Amino acid sequence: MLKIDALEFGYRSNRKILDHIEFDVANGECVAILGNNGAGKSTMLKCLNKIIAPQKGRVVVNEADILKMTRLDIAKNTAYVAQKSEGSRITAYDAILLGRKPYIKLAPKKEDYQIVENIIASMELEKFSLRYIDELSGGELQKVMIARALAQEPKVLLLDEPTSCLDLKNQLEVLKLIQNITKEKDIAVVIVIHDLNLALRYCDRFLFLKDNEIFCYGGMDIMTSENIGAVYQVPVTVESYQNQKVVIPLT
Amino acid sequence: MDNKKKTACGVNYDQYVHRKALTIVTLLILTFLTALFAISAGSADIPVAEVLKALFGFGAAKNVLVTVNIRLPRILMAIVGGIGLAAAGCVMQSILKNPLASASTLGISQGASFGAAIAITFLGGGTVMGNTADAVTVNNPYLTSICAFAASMFVTFVILGLSKARKASPETMILAGVALSSLFAGATALLQYFSSDVQMAAIVFWTFGDLGRASMQNIQVAAVVTIASLIYFMFNRWNYNALECGEHTATGLGVNVSRVRLIGMTVASLTAATIVSFVGIINFIGLIAPHIMRRFVGNDYRYLLPASALMGALMLLISDTFARLIISPIILPIGAITSFLGAPLFLYLIFKGVGHHAEN
Image (cartoon, rainbow over all chains, first blue to last red; front, top):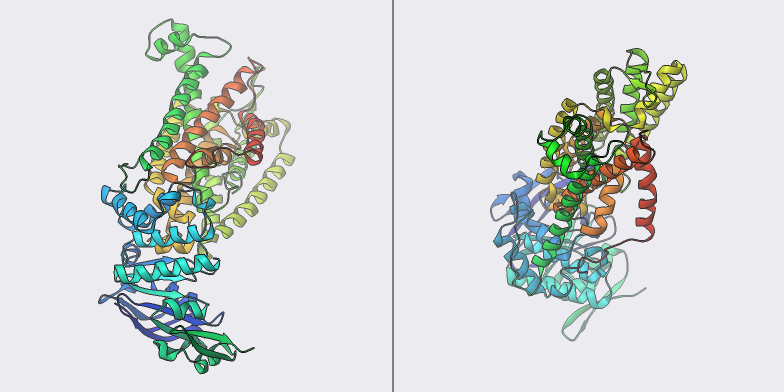
């Protein structure tokens, strides 16, 4: 269970980027953070595991405020997948093993390797696990980054636009993977995403950010043409297609 | 080296790890053999068997004298210096996320040159000797080394101070290094302009770099600093690996990025400054050794650090042997040789590239 309480952040004291952010995410639930460019979505995500330290508020994971934890303890509770992953000349296996870093003291133990290999097997990454990650396709790299985050065995998974550089097939694959992980691992997932239709398809709840504050937060019922139009300043209609809500811009 | 294990998912990670380990062991053997050859070769050729005897105090007195007193310190300094400069360069390239980072790029070498120039010009560190091989020499090496070390550490602390004010960003560190490098190069040129002919020759001679300049005491100090820094770097290998994935990802993995950068830069600069202050400017080793090994073992610092360190030792040994033998008995300046041999090799690596696939 993730609970965010009265979170505030600003680069300068007189200019708030985030103001009074409050919401919670249950285990096994995936929440989409939506809003315009510059609304503070990515900043909020980074505040949730103190990559950026918020000025006020609490981020509670299973009764403990992670903002008061050491960096290593935060990494054991939350895992973060950046918007743009930097490919390096390390193998996919070693990149996933890096997820065990918060637990490694001098060298990885047998159980660290076992966890990595279980993740590789469950995500079917064997065929490129010994390839350098700077040679992988965008979709493969993103899966490796998610696998690395899972190797941290987090209670909360934070993903910053995980599908922004992917083609349609990979977008669907990666989001389906995230959806499965959320349910199977029973973890709280917060995902910043731009594509409303993908959010509708794969996320359980939705949080709209507007003017540095939460505009609205809830389930499918808040995904209305009025709310979306007000946040994005674009007229839209929300239709139903095969029992699935679909957002269609009207401009 | 980290423990390896049998795989459960059909991935032969053991074999992959063995290949990396084999590269490091091969380098270790090559370094040892090159060191033996380097001790045996010279104006007085001594067979390898005699070298081995002499190293343990047996054999002809002349061989013991040449091997233990003259060549061994030089070879040891080449190994220690190569390891230190390459490991420092490797870590600087990681911390600063810049493939061109090294002691020379960051102004540490230029700071050392300026310190040496101060010692020679104002504190009486340089003079003329009668020997043709050493027409000009530095007659107060301790004073010169201390001044060179002090100046290069001054550069380091200015860079770190400026960087800390800007959250230790790699860009700030590099730009501060480039600015200080230019400042100290200009200051050294001014000192040379106003110094006497003898002093100027001594400054130039110092900057050439010379492994034979280091005493056993110097080598011991350099070895202690190098070993301590290598242990520190290896202890932080996972942090450097995490930094390769980006600052935010590293933070998300529990790395205190600013602290790793600041301490890492301090230790790397201290190592480079110690070596440079004893032997003068040796270009390219810190830059090129990590690049060569990246082609073979990738960017994983568990393997890249020891492999780069050994490659640095090997390169410096080969360069020094080349410098001693090519127009023996005259010994060419080692700094010029490392640049001369390193640059074409660097260009070859850029345009050709080897070992791209980890699976190959």
